[in-house]
Image 1 (cartoon, rainbow, N blue to C red):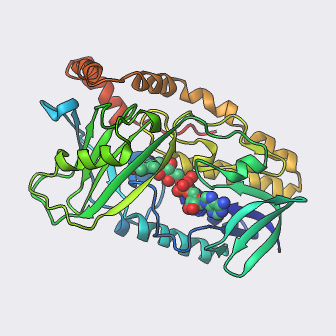
Image 2: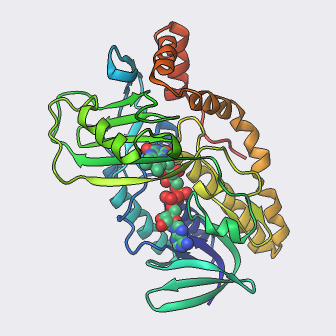
Length: 369
Ligand SMILES: Cc1cc2nc3c(=O)[nH]c(=O)nc-3n(C[C@H](O)[C@H](O)[C@H](O)COP(=O)(O)OP(=O)(O)OC[C@H]3O[C@@H](n4cnc5c(N)ncnc54)[C@H](O)[C@@H]3O)c2cc1C
């Protein structure tokens, strides 16, 4: 098979890239190893205000707006509540949202091969392994949208993520609640070493999760999640069902990678390290970087000039992450509950609260090239 662009991975980055390329008239094949898109979801699905403002996500697949963030120290005593005057977050119902994105891709003309794994490159062709057996695809360009541990990045000789957190969460439906939707974050390195434990309860679904450096969970991540879900804040009066959906995966937090393109293709989303090193949010970055990738690929295909891909340069964009990388290094240093409690004292001061508001409710997002 011969195509203009082969996109590997139908997460949000791959779906968005493939759809926009097809809308510009290119012949696109999107290949995804999962057999169904609503299966094995790897994200909580919290969309920030900037994304909701700038991208037309289907409102029927978004939960109620959240304005309240509650920050908890270890042990969850005396939390700090921050309330925004604006709607700050909405949690996507990710199964239907991926399915809607796949329908949009198919409507635009993308050929989607589910249950089909990208298995490597040979003599300039990509090897796929699908339900009908192996196939070889010749694409002018390959897009690695295959997540944090990208095989495409390896095969194209591009940079790869080496600074990763791992995260896991439980998701379950809640019956309508009297309380306002809220996002609870717990700063406790015994539960979430180097990051946060969280509860998002928007009145429709509850997400209870932990994330951190894999080798620093005192008893492993699964146990940390079990311990947290037994005492998590924000779920008073909520009944946790026996069966819950479980999600999890790696989160690259080393900042955008430097070398994310070569004459044969480029990387988008987690594969490119396009995740905020501080908040670990990757949904907004993956949408924005995909749009830049589409501009570059469109120009390269039209001109028949692979060298155009050199303008897709992670090193140039990475400068915008300097502050967030420094804060990530700071968060990584919070290694004991005592240090977390001391750091939390700063959050109770007016400058500490103002800094937290800037991070949680600010207008910054992924840099526009
Ligand atoms: C537990 C957790 C919670 C998170 N919560 C949030 C959040 O609330 N808000 C936020 O902004 N960010 C969040 N993130 C980060 C965010 O989810 C990611 O940055 C974002 O989803 C990345 O999208 P992507 O399309 O690049 O990658 P992915 O969604 O990982 O998609 C990659 C796709 O490639 C496929 N694939 C991989 N290898 C192959 C192969 N060889 N062949 C074919 N297909 C392949 C995979 O099956 C997958 O479907 C979270 C991450 C985790 C782990």
